[in-house]
Length: 381
Ligand code: MG
Image (cartoon, rainbow, N blue to C red; front, side):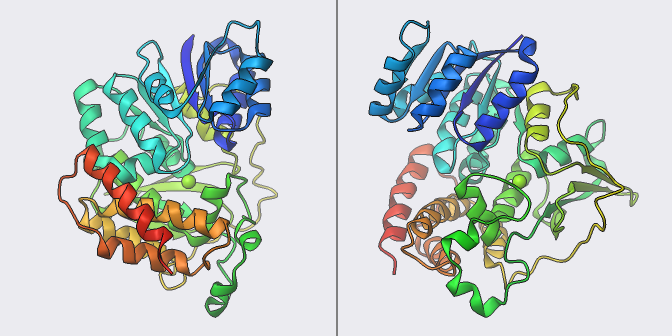
């Protein structure tokens, strides 16, 4: 039995992970679940999975959960400090980090420092502090297992392969809802336009990131750290059907791809059961009905966020962290309908340009930059 904790269990990835665990309960013991404010979902999860502990970041939410689960032997906690503490619990075999945004970075680091393997859905961890996380892994020997569907695909394609044989990896992206929208109409994109993703059902933050294609940019940086490649070895191709989840091209010209229906439960399950592909009843891909698979080059003019992501990867140091923080805060401002869709890339670029760049930031430097960037983004107009 694998002892597993889930950070962000009431979010889209967390709920899907518990769907996976529900189907193979003999493989897992649920240790710690954490959530923010969603008491209803957390109470239901507590009753069903009987974890050792539940932490709600919001203190009032914790009180509600505690009352509802009285009598069950579940420890109830509140606050971010407790969440961080539990992320580093050495009794846990695998931590699924399904937190949203840059706040997921410290829990990832805490777990890896303590030798706990991490199934990583929170790509922002690697964007913000890739170097620090990489060194923590080397020191403790703990592993990172990708949950992101593209990185899971590459991970699967690389199984049994020799790293030196890789020519490049090809990350696929659907192109989001605005792949064919007239560029001069981007400034009038509304929140509900942007939340309407054609293929994947996901949380709000990542859905906006898919609309700007910043998600693909963040994934380039995530891939850089996960697979240790040169920037020039990481390519993006737009593939609107989201059937091929990504590919690896080898030096002899051979290409391996991983395919499937666009369903996050599949990569989540693989990260939880690696190296096994255990039986599941999730929907199967039917080649007789999928129709054409098409591909096109990503359009950097239409999606400037992709270019910004490649640029910060070249600059390295603190540049990726600032891009990530700025993107988080811009997305929240866009969701509050305070800024236009086209402001997102504009503000991010300005934040990266205006921050005080450091070559080898420490965690404290990165935290300070988070405050600086929040201030910069929230006062930008
Ligand atoms: Mg992805």
